[in-house]
Length: 404
Ligand SMILES: Cc1cc2nc3c(=O)[nH]c(=O)nc-3n(C[C@H](O)[C@H](O)[C@H](O)COP(=O)(O)OP(=O)(O)OC[C@H]3O[C@@H](n4cnc5c(N)ncnc54)[C@H](O)[C@@H]3O)c2cc1C
Image 1 (tube, rainbow, N blue to C red):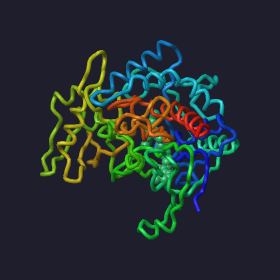
Image 2 (image 1 turned 30 degrees about the horizontal axis):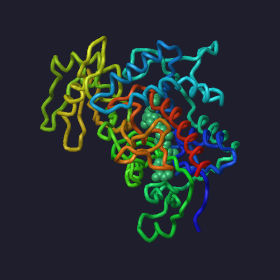
Image 3 (image 1 turned 120 degrees about the horizontal axis):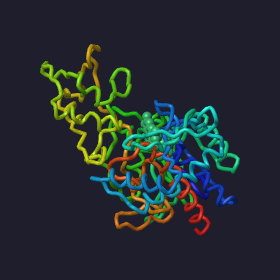
Image 4 (image 1 turned 30 degrees about the vertical axis):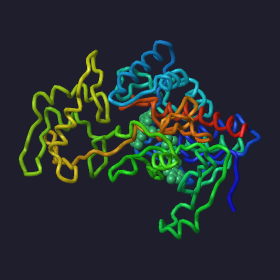
C-alpha cells in the first residue's frame, strides 16, 4: 500500500528543514512529510566535524553589492545564474533573522552584539557564525513539528517517482536494509505526493576521502538526474588538504610554504619554488583549492599553483608526505569538502529538465543544487543558500500542491 502525503521533502539538513518550515507555514491545511535517513543531527549541516558554520550576512546595500560582486568574481570557470545570485544576496539577511528568531546560537560579543567574521575568499567580515549545531537541529525539528510536519526518520530515498516528467513522490526504504534487489523490493515503500522537494545534500560522500557528516550519501545528484533533472557545475568539487591521520585541515600556505619540504614517491626531498611560495599570501585566504584565478588585493591570482605543487608530489594513493620546519613528517591528502554543482533550478527551486523547462512538482534546494554560485563558493554562502532557496522551494511546493 503506498503512503500518501501532499508535500514530500527529502533530506533533514538545513535546506530540507527550511523547506518543510516554509511549506507547512504557507499551506497549513496540507500534509507535509519530511523523510530522512537518521533520527539525529546528520549531514554537512548538523554533523560536520567543524561543529560550526559561517553564514553570509550582508546588512547594508554596500555589503550586499560587495557580496554580489564577490560571488561573480569567483564563478569562473563554472556557470552562474545572476538572478539566483541576486536573490541569494537580497534575501540573506531576512533568512538569518528567521534562524535568529528561533534562538539558534550565533557567536556574539559579551554585549550581545552579533559577531561577524571573514570567510573563505573574502577579506570582509560579513559572516555570522552558527555554533551548537545539534541545538540548531533540535530547534528546527521542534519548529516544523509544531507546524504539523511528519518527521519520518530512518528512511532512505531510493528513487523519485516520476510520471511523464511530473513528480509524484519517492520510493523509500528502511535505512540499513541490504542492497540486494529482492531485499530492496521487500523493504521499499512508495510515498506519493503532489509535490516533492529534494534536499539530499551534496556529492562529497561519494568519494572515499570526504568531510561530510554522518548520514551523507552523496546520492542527491544521481536521484535528480535519473528523474530527468539537468545538472551543471558538477566538476567543481571543493577540496581541502587534511592530515590523513588526524583529519585536521592543513593550509597549503603552510605545507607548501617557505618552511615546507615534500618527499617525492621515489624518496627525494623537494622544496617549493619561489614561484609557488609567492602564492602563499593569496592561498591563505581560503581553505578549498580554487578553480581558476581568485581575486587577491585587487588582482586575479592563480594560487592553485600551491595545490598543484603538492599534488605533483603525491603517491599513487593521492597521499603526500610533507614536513614543515622541525615538525615530524606527516601525510596529507585532498578530501572532498562539498560540491558547487548540482541540479539546475529556477528562482523558486523548480528543477529544470535538459531543455531548461521545469519538471512539474519537482523542487530542490541546498547543496544538491547549483547556479547561485559557480565554480567557487564564498565561505558562508552555502548556509545562506540553504535558507534562501529552502524557503523558496518549500513555498513553491506548497503553491504547486494547492493547485494540483
Ligand atoms: C566540515 C564542513 C564545514 C562546512 N562549513 C561551512 C560553512 O562554514 N559555511 C557554509 O556556508 N557552508 C559550509 N559547509 C557546507 C554546508 O555545511 C553544506 O553545504 C550545507 O549544510 C548542506 O545543507 P543541505 O541541507 O543541502 O545538505 P545536508 O546538510 O548534507 O543534509 C542532507 C540530508 O539528506 C540526508 N540524506 C542524504 N542522502 C539520503 C538518502 N538517500 N535518503 C534519505 N536521506 C538522505 C542526510 O542524512 C541529511 O539529513 C561545510 C561543509 C562541511 C562538510
